Image (cartoon, rainbow, N blue to C red; front, side, top):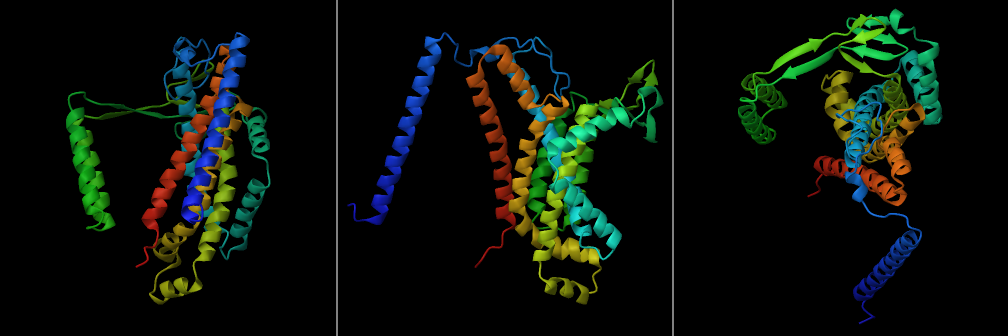
Length: 371
């Protein structure tokens, strides 16, 4: 039996897994016994207790009397919001900067190279602290706020921007949900049968009908200076603005280099074929080069997106209450350090595995199928 390679491999793997599990059980039992002997509480019952902690900024509604588990959800929502915004804007800017680095214009290519080199060779925490200090040294007081665009004000207290609110009719929501479901099924069917223009037109028509059935009314609330601050609209604090701008600048440098390498990976013959068809450079990039380079850049892009989630923990350096900052407060207040660290590890592992799964799924979709 042991002479068979496959059987021997299975036995070795089973033995290794058994040893690892046994070691983990001994470690857990010893830890629990030591904590019990010292009278240190263990367990997750504390999550249902009122948190009594203050979260200065929250995407979701939060009050100090809410339980610990809701404080964790609020901190997680802040981290997901930061990561999603940074990933979105750094992807767009990275595409532009990466392609511009290959431009024949020396000023444009040189400017993008400076951006890339500064971003790649600067510690992100130094960049965040530098940007955060600019709010108080460069920007004017709130009474003298800059007004670069209509309804947008910039001061040492952050950005004041217009807010858009939507009023939906409760009676029409069910019908709107049905139309959306029908529209999604039509899009799935049309995606392989119709042109992209028809798919986009169908999506717009579905959204328009759904909003009409839900009797949606949109309201724009403009910020107005009154007293000593702005009222109305939405506010982006210096802390939130710093983490969003800083991480976007930092991540864009890495994404741009990935994009540049992806463009260079497409053979010169593809460009020549596009030129022979009379296509301009922009259409060659959009129709020929970018679809091919996606297969090359997606794995390193996935790594950068995971780094964005991990780098979001640097929000604690500028005082923004992300998931890690909230968990640190919960650990110090509840004295459940082991459970808190376990929650931190589990949440970041779940976020990164989710990102990897989505990227791997898309990578399989665009992969070349060999016959």
